[in-house]
Length: 145
Image 1 (cartoon, rainbow, N blue to C red):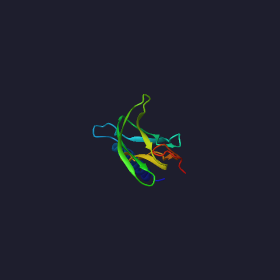
Image 2 (image 1 turned 90 degrees about the vertical axis):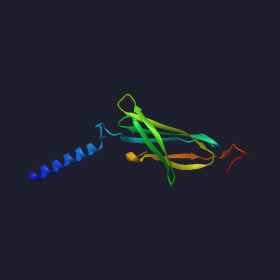
Image 3 (image 1 turned 30 degrees about the vertical axis):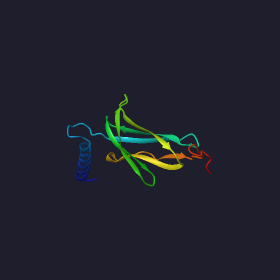
Image 4 (image 1 turned 120 degrees about the vertical axis):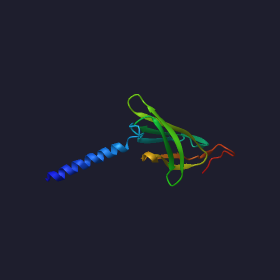
């Protein structure tokens, strides 16, 4: 193999690595806040009666403590946010922040949701929210077909 070509290839790799690391630094030389992973979970109502409640949690993992704006999107359309998540050290070198919300369910739903941190180019997994609401407890409170 040509030595000149090999030296040029190695120099290019070193420059690319240095450039990407330089982009990860803030002006003061400290690493910029980066979201390394996001995870979402929804606990659908355990009952067929509505109104009911579901629990939603989003875990944001970062390389250091800081505030991360997140958004929640519904499959097929609709985005809510931003919601701020503050990440803190866990004691084992990781940084994590949690966003929790209780969702009130008044009608049948079968939808999927995911969280995102667009500034950090991170997405969570898709999570289903299902509730049949076969038993209505408000107003006439009858059984729904």
